[in-house]
Image 1 (spheres, rainbow, N blue to C red):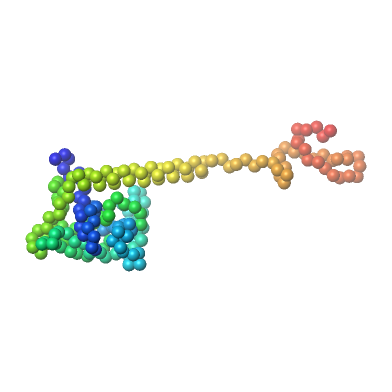
Image 2 (cartoon, helix red, strand yellow):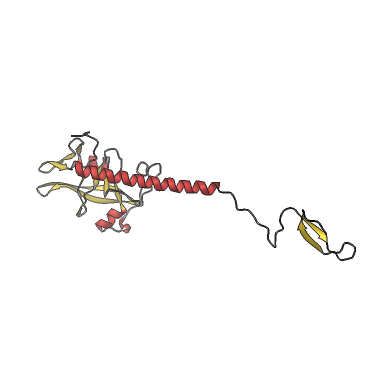
Length: 211
């Protein structure tokens, strides 16, 4: 086994009535998170969402994430002979993610689940004994690569947007050209008939001879 413990624990529980193949078990998160796109797959409309308590950090790098609401959904682990079903509260986010959902410590506590990151297994008590949920290194690796590629793409687009904003801020103001309603700098007026009573004047460049 190469570098045991570095792989993510990605499981496939049944949420509502659909088995989702990419649900991350994140023991370092204090939230259960689900994406709007996943709710669309489950056939759940936005009108069913409840108000959320507020924003959170750690999901979008360097930024505060604002959920669009929260929702209680049934989650099931196991097989027909021995399964466990609990209702978890998910924060619903509108941005894109590489997983269908993320189950954090509240989910671990609700199922009384224990992860094994060496063998990528999740164990929890069931009505007929211990329920063991297994993942594979190949699936975990594919999810990890997809997550890294998406993160790099987001970072690149963010850097590009920041550079464009910086260039726009540093760009010099456009020069103002002389027109019929605004005389150019360095001009002077001369009388058309200095010896007469005509007070009409003409504006010329200061460098020109009045004659």
